Length: 103
Length: 162
Image (cartoon, rainbow over all chains, first blue to last red; front, top):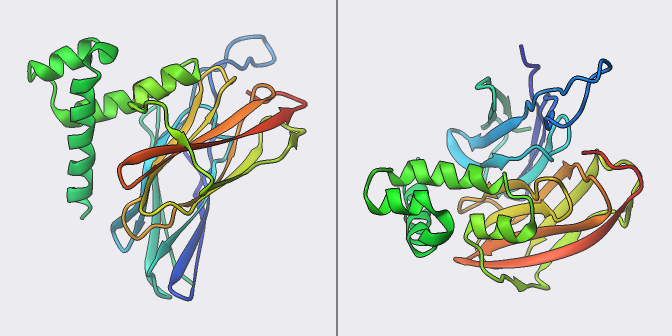
């Protein structure tokens, strides 16, 4: 089970800033465990951010995004109490979606 | 809900895929033959770019040809990164209508790190953290108003983190 994405969305002067910390190993498939076996690649491939259901950021990750991917982005509009959600999918097909209110 | 934006992007992908048919090989052929839907190509080319081992390969896979350096892209990254596993990168594009930002590191085993699209209303601003295998350039591509631009910055990595 994946851990919840930490999201903080704040709005000021018509601009909403979203800080996101996804919880994911982001293994690139080249690292080895203590026994010397390769750890298979396991990473987030797709990310989508929505404001009240409307996509405000979307894209793909490779294996070189750091463990527990961190993103900060800004969009115009957004009022206190509006919903901001972050969804991701990884290369094993696992998905996760978390939502917060803008403060 | 963002449908028109996606369709425009797919249209562009398709045109590019047709134009760069040789580079895309089988995809171009299958697309021209109508065996693959544009949406599938969109996703497939997006993923293919992440397999690229060099900057040129990555640019080709993304369909970006000789992007101009732009002083309107501000790229912030540390001069020296003690931990290559966590290198903070901030991109701020002052270019009108920034639609897409790609982050790459030219000496990583795979060059493309992230490819993000910014719908209308989202600022051309991004902070993230990336892994770097060794000292190399961090390169960002910014697509603004339909054209690609680039900015780069050398980051010395003292302990690789890939």
